[in-house]
Length: 62
Image 1 (cartoon, one colour):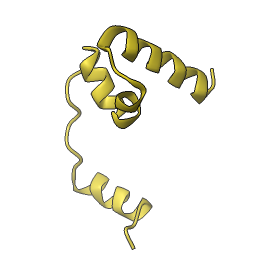
Image 2: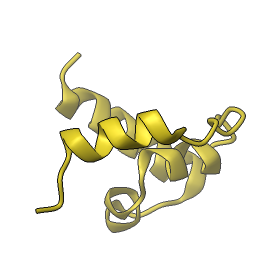
Image 3: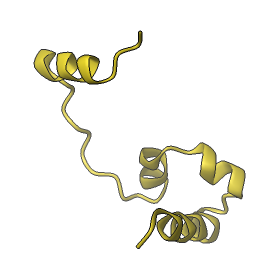
């Protein structure tokens, strides 16, 4: 399945189940969509110092 196929299916579900219009769907994060559909799981543990340092190195702001 391509990204376009998955996005089309997710947009259809958001419209049918949540009544979201396209702009609302595209403005939402995947986590917001999962929460709105009741599919979210327990929150992830916060990143520890090592994970945060690795992310900052991989994605510098500079």
